[in-house]
Image (cartoon, rainbow, N blue to C red; front, side, top):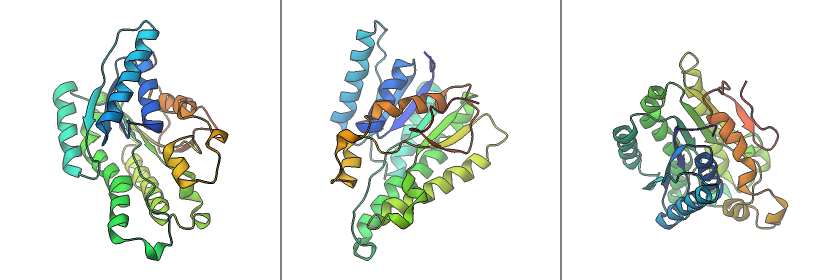
Length: 249
């Protein structure tokens, strides 16, 4: 129970990596707040959490489900207010939600698609930082983890993926700046690159690859847990989940 009693917000928790992280956090004792657009997907994640608790003989702790569109900054602000009113703090923030965006020549991307990709992948995380910082500082051991991608370091090999590549490069800059602002506080902030994982989003991005050649989302959850623990001191780093278990240091 490495996260026993910790309040953890996970965005994009209706499927893929977000759902796997939410289930693992709950299994480690966290009280999870799950945010995503799809109500049905959030309910499926909650059902899985409760079933896993039952099978393990643990007391069930229903997740807090927050259906919202992260592209709407006011919804993020309202969610933070609700977390403050209910829990008084936030111990862990996982900024996982994202979309791949259109895969086509850059000059052919519509302004609407471009703005949507930036809104979900970049601006939403800025709004999460802005809304959740006071709650994370109130924790006394706040931990923030943002999901990045190797594409941020290999943009030259990422033709037809401009929106996704640009937002991940910008996200890494944003999070590192925020981390630098908290060198002398109790808040620890990191970026985590899960690598190729067997998710719907990865299959959409690479339709020619066999999904079974990639690990399931559950395979990368250990890195998230390690970065969410109160004892973790890593800060301002980009960590590759499949190359390290991301132990505290």
